[in-house]
Length: 216
Image 1 (tube, rainbow, N blue to C red):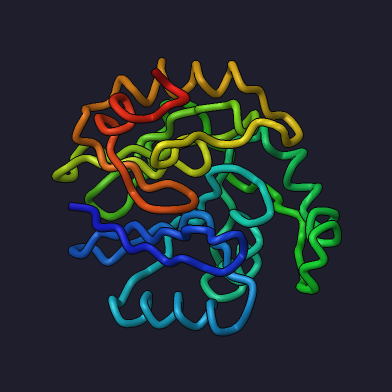
Image 2 (image 1 turned 120 degrees about the horizontal axis):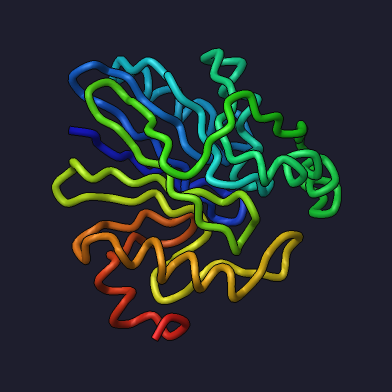
């Protein structure tokens, strides 16, 4: 059964996730938001301690906070990027985003090596994640659903947060598309599904159906 580790890094409070199979010791690193050596070492220490092999590097979308650590993952583990091709134009904008935010760190373009689409299955050891295409925050935004965990879980990126939703005022964003993505795709998942968002605390599908003011 897949397990989830959460790392909250300093760039916009990004949640980076390691999803791993404790039997086969394979893992996926999702949305690596690391921007300095301390954060990079924290992630490496965990991967080394658990004896994991990084078999997947996945971005839920290609905004800078979710993709800035891709280069480090490639250098440390040889991992290549998996993401939805509709966000490729955002990947090319990452150096400009870094300059606009005056981050003062190296920020390479995010180049997709393995394109992902709706319904793709990502194998991690004996477990799997299903790709759900949920545009609105960005055109190529995806969420990753594990049905076999107890309870099931969803890596949601910046689509759905506790009592909130992703912003839609960035390039390629669209409010009605986002609302439709959540209601037509995510809200069809079991109510007990744990939602791990790109920022902030976890929640559940059932809780957001009941309490999210944007989705009533």
